[in-house]
Length: 178
Image (cartoon, rainbow, N blue to C red):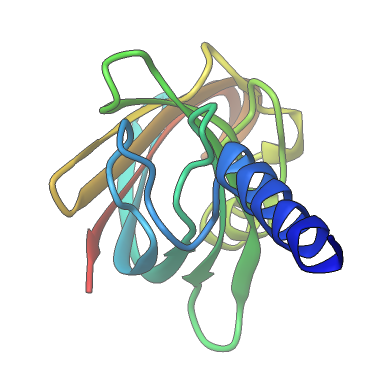
């Protein structure tokens, strides 16, 4: 009797773990995204007559999605010199299993993914980027080993010459699984 109760306990534990999903092994319905990615962050500022683009290297470490399609990870973007930015990644696969709703990636969360004030201030010291707000939720996808996330921010002022003008900042991160 004791042996059969132990076996029932083991089977019950296995069933619970299988139902919850795992962050290290992929589920059958979502792509295997676990691993390290080499990333490139591209930021484009448009403010009055100023139009500048900065491209920064980075890395992303991802875990596989759970059975509900939610996943987590971490990111690291290298600024100039010793300036870097790091943080959490949180996303949700869409029903097509390739479209991603990005919940967190940067200093912000919710509708502010890719909002990385430390990098923005480094790149654009003449702009009040702390006032920037996302124009829409961040979008992205995963196709094969390629991951993307994009967002656009506005509502901040930049000093261009003697004028103060409204700025728009586009941000995109592309990453390829190593």
